[in-house]
Image (cartoon, rainbow, N blue to C red; front, side, top):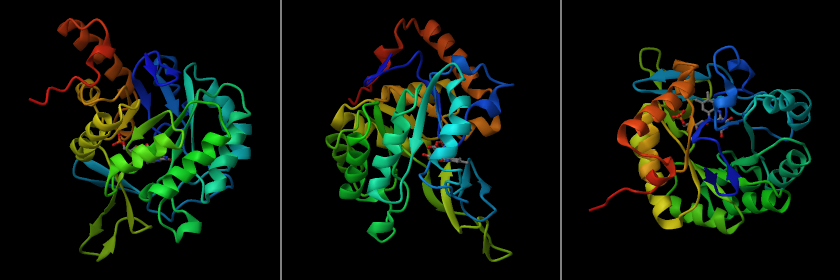
Length: 299
Ligand SMILES: Cc1cc2nc3c(=O)[nH]c(=O)nc-3n(C[C@H](O)[C@H](O)[C@H](O)COP(=O)(O)O)c2cc1C
């Protein structure tokens, strides 16, 4: 199936930051069956990430404040990329910068390497030149980061949007105009978990991102809004736990789906979703999964 310029063998992918380089799952999952693996977000310099605790469970969801820890792009290329490339499926590399120019530099460095199928630009990170606001929150910052990456890569380029913005269609349109081939909708939702007896937040960073089933109906609406208005190739990300979730996202306009938090509940969930998808399509007499995309009847 076609996701913009990218050819996928199926629509089931694993989301950034929830699947490592794939190697962590190699004993449980036949990685070559996946549509693609999106790497953890790579930054230019090494980062320690946020103080612990970094995870807190909530009803129907998970809060995380990982803070993009990692060895930086040089060590990623030397140590992690060979593992990611050897998974037998497409490797999509997620990048994030602290300044607009860093998105360009990261795209350039990643594109110089063999065996990378696409770049996903994670703009849900602070812009230190913009007073610490997230790139994802502002049309100019979001489109600037996208343009910087686009200028330095010929690889298919996807921009991962934040779900918590005033007008997601405006941000989506601006990054597409800046050269993105498609979109990932969306990242986790800013959230807070509190231990009231201790009078303290459960996360070391105080706030974090909410993911999992709790966010699915909200992200579903965002995918629908953006798909209707832009017709862009979309990867959905938000609370996908089952094959029915994948089909819901496809009906509202997504072409592919990224499995995130569900991997922590069941490392084999992506393969189970793929099998269930095949069974459901056979049951419903649907020969071509592409025929589902954007078929929501609004009346
Ligand atoms: C522990 C954890 C780490 C994550 N790390 C990243 C990351 O490095 N880059 C990124 O773009 N998204 C990251 N995400 C967001 C996921 O890729 C995904 O977009 C989000 O969790 C929503 O999908 P889900 O509800 O299926 O988990 C992370 C999520 C979790 C739970």
